[in-house]
Image 1 (cartoon, rainbow, N blue to C red):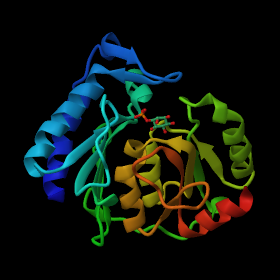
Image 2: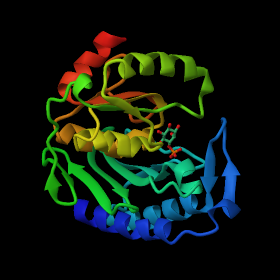
Image 3: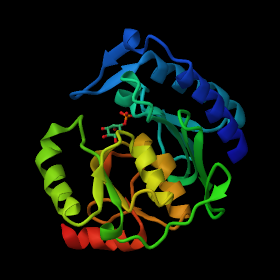
Image 4: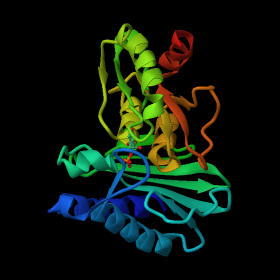
Length: 253
Ligand code: LIP
């Protein structure tokens, strides 16, 4: 089933690569700087149509849905059709399609695909994590030995001060800081040892569901600011890191 999901996501990536006049079809959503383009909707509709053929009994939760289904049921796809929408609008070419598959509320498969770099991250529970066929293994990077990525919660400006308070502590310790604009890719970059750690004080389930299992299957750690498991059915804070950096993070706060 994972191969079928990967093949569908790859085809969906062509919609993004062939996009044009993106700014003609933009709508604003709740919160500041929260946009949806006609391509977010087109990719989501394509994924729903094709994934339904693979797993007809599955429920769907997608960023661009008007209604929310139940993630706790049997099978549920949790989808962000374009993670990094603002990047996409400005042709920044750092966005991803993210698909997570939950079974009874636990993620069992994840696919995160950046069509601009043709990089497909994927994992199945108990079978490891991969990037374009290469197995991923998180090393023991400490914060001081690596780059740290941050999320700035642009749709929740009430979190700005706390975000930058924590960021300053990390900046004083890490080699440098990055803000890429795609949470799903940030989490996958931890799995690929490109980042030692990533954090964001609020993310929706579709931002983190697919990437979370890629990181844990690669040997990384992921949890909330309270060091709890991700809920998958609610927005939450997310810390994604190598095991050593994960423990360091909570000491730094
Ligand atoms: C975005 C995330 C980003 C976060 C934004 C938003 P979107 O996802 O990738 O890290 O800071 O608030 O959630 O909205 O582009 O799919």
